[in-house]
Length: 107
Image 1 (cartoon, rainbow, N blue to C red):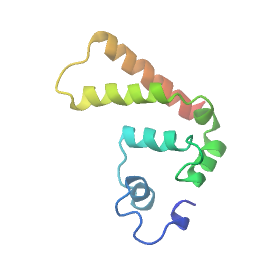
Image 2 (image 1 turned 30 degrees about the horizontal axis):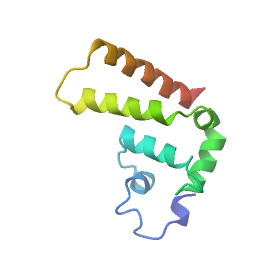
Image 3 (image 1 turned 60 degrees about the vertical axis):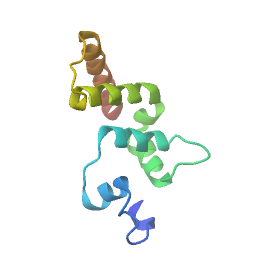
């Protein structure tokens, strides 16, 4: 639905539209940004994405915690790209936040 409303070439500079159109890769941070955007007022950039999430993943939107999601992304980024090791406490927190995120998708 989102793609049907976009003009030709509009996905060129937009990673989310590129993902929808061509199946390109989205990072966790980019996914979190798009989910966060569906909750913004006065309205999201992609109302059809919000409608789809409300229909297909209502638990995700109902229990979405942008601070937890941002922390998950920060820890994941540090673990993947930071060049330093995570502390045991951060590793446990990363695991717990990962479980929280996956549960939001499948509950």
